[in-house]
Image (cartoon, rainbow, N blue to C red):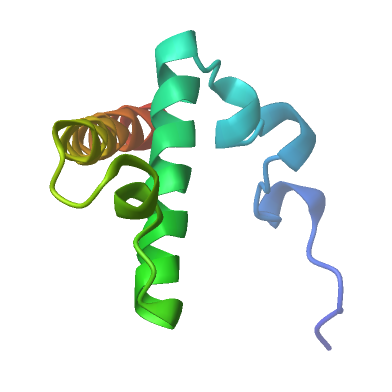
Length: 95
């Protein structure tokens, strides 16, 4: 008759989660990473306001199609591209 518990040498090895660490604990964010993260959050909030209330907060603050509003859009776009780079770096570390 088979037993419910397998012998110790046949058990699967399951690594402890405490020792493996998560991506957030294993990654130290630089100042540039934090700035990019904040800019992406600002961009996401602005797009949420555009979608929900047709309110472009950047255009309302800096003027529609002004140099300053275009600069904000470009900087947020660059931050998003940098965010893709950071994400790929984090994915490579987790392998």
